[in-house]
Length: 309
Ligand code: HEM
Ligand SMILES: [Ca+2]
Ligand SMILES: [Ca+2]
Image (cartoon, rainbow, N blue to C red; front, side, top):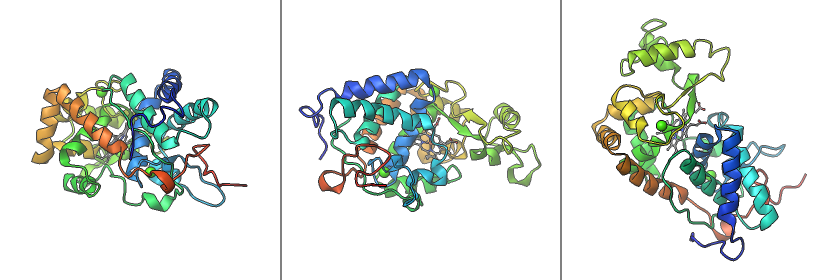
């Protein structure tokens, strides 16, 4: 249903056009890459990789991107897709879907951070719908237990190994304080400075200080991987072995023998992580994709083609 040479005749330069646009975007705004990776995950897990997350709300609909969990997706990530799509509309109008652009952009940005390269097959169609309600229970939350996380991914056809490899994406990017505040303040009602004992005490103290004003300033955030925050590597897993995971769902991977074994494997062997990550990303990239009349090639990624004012 997807093909590596899908646009060979209709838009032969699609890959280099996307690459040029997103490389430039990343050079001017460094938060683009991690933001785009998360944007892609949030698109794929809600109704498949169909650019449903890119649609903007209008008088007639409250779109997916306005769901609470998507409000923290950075504008720079959306902008990376818009820039690539704009250039594509000049080179080959109404040909390349936004879902394909997002899949390619994510791959290219990952490699810019030092992550592994992989082939992305093409031919996805863009969704004909997008709604806040569709997000519902489709995305994992940081307060989920490992059994809950495993079930969440398993329901979508992803094994434990694939889940742990994909979560290695938290080797880049950042999280807002509210996502981990319950781990560092008044943990289990133990007093204002009591923190989750599975967190390294020095990290906990550093975060307590960094986040102290987060109620007033909700934009305060911390790196997911405090050691190499903008490098795609296996440091995330090494951190977990030392209690340096940021989100509860990150550190929890050490608490369950099924996931802890994989964390140790990836911490010891970056090649094993990269190999598994590539396979899992390719699988994620093809999750629930629409082809043919199931969707359309949007001319603008934020509006359906039939939308008229
Ligand atoms: C295991 C389940 C997961 C949970 C509970 C989770 C949760 C979160 C949360 C709460 C944030 C912070 C967002 C913010 O405050 O702005 C975050 C960030 C991030 N997540 Fe996940 N995530 C999970 C899996 C994944 C997967 C599978 C990927 C990609 C393959 C991913 C990629 C990212 C990236 C790249 C960021 C950083 C975003 C940025 O810097 O803007 N996550 N995640
Ligand atoms: Ca989607
Ligand atoms: Ca890293």
